[in-house]
Image (cartoon, rainbow, N blue to C red; front, side, top):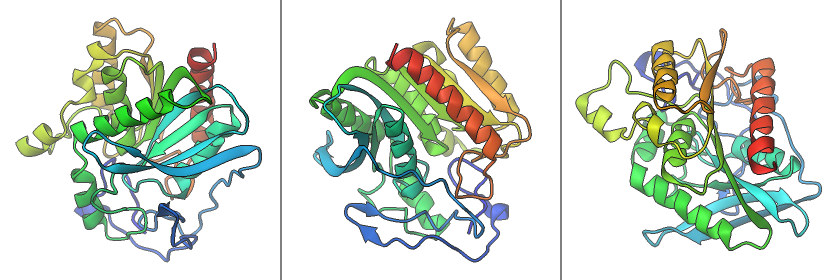
Length: 300
């Protein structure tokens, strides 16, 4: 198991290993059925949300490049219409943690849609080779990811059970995507970004800086909806300087309804209940803030 402390995966000195547990799923349907073994803690006891009174669907939708993009959908049973939340995964794709989060949102009255952004190359969820996972993630470029989100939004717009209220939330890699999507799509009404990169790391090469564009710190003025950022003070991949820079950029752009909250001493991945980084109190507080924002903007 890798102690994942950075948004796009570990650096050379981040590795430590222990016996894996709970990654018992094989490939079930379209998506890997278990928890990502590359980051699963041996002692993990993840939250398990049942599907009682929910409608669960695994299907595919047509992306702009013609690819049939797998999506996982969890929504309340019934005609609706319901507000929708696009769920953007970490680097491990749509594994059981992401599906459970979708079910939690569905229990709160939302239709949750989780696209599998990485599977054009390979599903990273069942892999334990972090170098390969990073290669897969690096292949998911900005325009492809935005195209996939646009396809999900279009698909949702054609569903009788969906109304026109849309939110987006994501973790790690997906946290950065939240900022990007909220700047790109006027259909989005609110976003919650969990510890996604905001600016290039200090050690980034020119090539890495270019590949990571557009960076959220450069998109503050383009946000079309309020975004709440939830970040950890002890995140070794996202320094507090970049958080301060993002908050300053939001203030300078007059985006008074967007800001970042920082949890003291919390590491990267503090919401991930299957990892060593999980911090239950901070995760619960962040989830309550997510529900409050979505209640105000998607149900108000």
